[in-house]
Image (cartoon, rainbow, N blue to C red; front, side, top):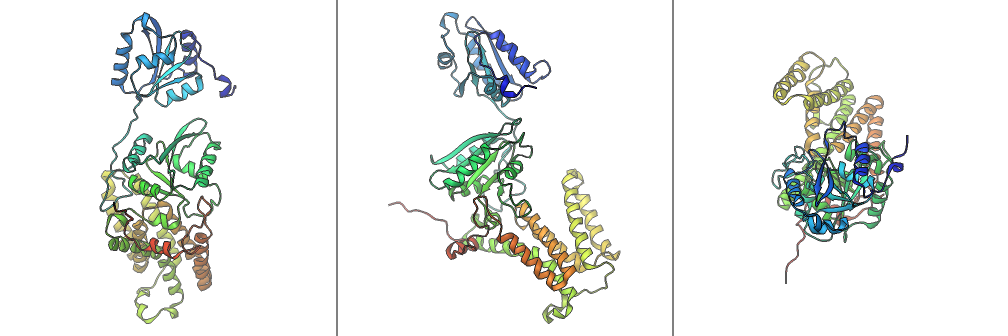
Length: 478
């Protein structure tokens, strides 16, 4: 089978030859959405190719009406002059080889060929099926903007441009994937970005050898940072909010947008960046600080609560008098470690069921799950009420921060600490905590810097900013 590059050809002035070649390459006989129309422009035969569903019909109609009125004696000698005189539409291009033209066509750009011209005229009047820029379901805020990214790349870049009206904001377009040719937009502020990191990111994207970014941003993330896959703590921050992305750009970060993905990938990102949320800044400093500290505390409790409780249950002599109430009120039939592990997996099972349940059945499912995993589960003897209480808190605490990746990383570490505690008691509990802290401390961002900066290396002023939300910087005129 010949290589794709071997089939590249330069267009000739013979329109019939061009149509025959393109119809064979695009398989117009069986692809119903690849449409071509033969027409007459200025006494010459012409052919317009476009993808049905990607083209604004009104724009094409107006352009064709204008072209049909051209007289034969007014036809220019070359395609460049023709585009200047008779194509008033703003986004016009000239392409001379077939590979670029086919890629543009399959991206939604209309392509016009005229007999006697060896150049394809591209007319960018495409439109993509898109939903409204409504507030994302996951990254909701109590106060602030209610718009969110969608699956159309140009809409997402416009949402960022709307917030940063600065010529130093650069948005470069690249492609990846031999078959998909997925568009990737790299956004950064020229005067604030780490130029070394920017060059590294561009080099890695250009060097990608993949057939397609089937899982869009996740596929790209795994290609950009293929190392330390065994460490579950996220290397990137994902956000569906354009205001969060704009703020990250102004802080000197790089934002990567992938076509068909409704979220932005922000890098480099430390654990403190991932924990931050937009609500921290949509409220006054004292309220934002309270929300941030509450989120950090709850995240820490979700990691250590059940392992610490299990450790105390295995060593009741270590329980202080003021915590005597945490002891089991009833005897247990199933070992505590198995109760906790079963509930860990049962909660994930319910989460998966909720995702795949039709919306009209979500309420009945929630009621049934609450009854089965609540009162009946305790009465049956499988679980103790204390176990159910602590796991309920952990489940709710997992939703106190927006990052799914960080939530699952905490879950994996919690399960490891539970297993080590059950197997080796106090030594296992200590080993699990040390292992978790090492997984966080020895993690690295994509820039190769510390994952827990400004804690390591220590920087007091920056550390205070991570924990306490201060006043936003401002400049006074005059």
